Length: 283
Ligand code: ADP
Ligand code: MG
Image 1 (cartoon, rainbow, N blue to C red):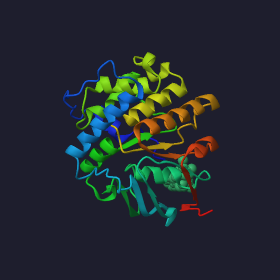
Image 2 (cartoon, rainbow, N blue to C red):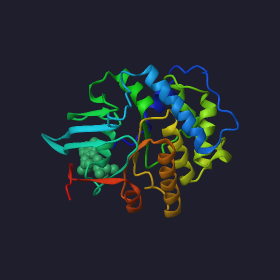
Image 3 (cartoon, rainbow, N blue to C red):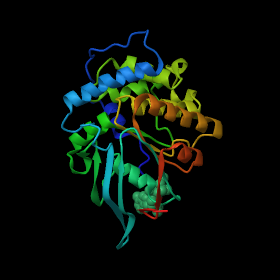
Image 4 (tube, rainbow, N blue to C red):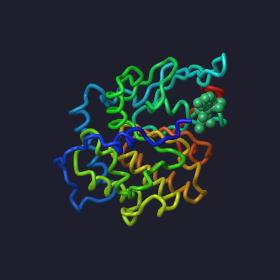
């Protein structure tokens, strides 16, 4: 239902102001996850330094809080209740699976958590900032800085190369380092240094999803939200993407919230939250 490209991407491709070339350049000697940690720490400084009002990221503040979220939609003269009061709290660095039958409301919930859709009632706090009561401009800024998104169908921009796809969110808002250096660093981390110049139609499904994950991590967001990230992949590619997500979480401490039908993904999570008919199931 909200399976569109990330609004940040659309905003960027619609020609928002690019960030200026900024101070940090990754030295060629820095490799692998150390590189990402370093980049990540610097980005943390940037975020806490420039956006302290929305990104607190202190240990006591959950990465994500949903408070009594409801969503209903009109259907003829009636309204149908899709989400009926979801409350949850996810700590920084957690890897949480959202599971439940098809149609139970997982994608609707993720869209609301990501600020792509608004709830009928309730509040979403990302790093302590209430995204349900923000202006569009402020919300766009928080989505860019703090929320990464990965979709089942990858949703890369078909006319851009892998590297350019990862650079796009870095041209919105202010981010340290050169976008090209950061994109190369992230694509190296997801094992795609040899595919920088390929367009999405020249990449396998597994490779496209790796690019999408690199793009979601580009601005060093506090939380990465994934809707069925292995849903369009065969078992081998799905396993590879899952392994990569686990390694990235270990290396970066990013919080991952993953809606999934895939029992392997759910088993790899720290915990699973089960949604049934718009409510969190207690058993
Ligand atoms: P899941 O991701 O768990 O499969 P969804 O969040 O996509 O579930 O959908 C939850 C329920 O909301 C389903 O019954 C679906 O048919 C309904 N729904 C989703 N989007 C819309 C919409 N735009 N209009 C009407 N009903 C919708
Ligand atoms: Mg869904």
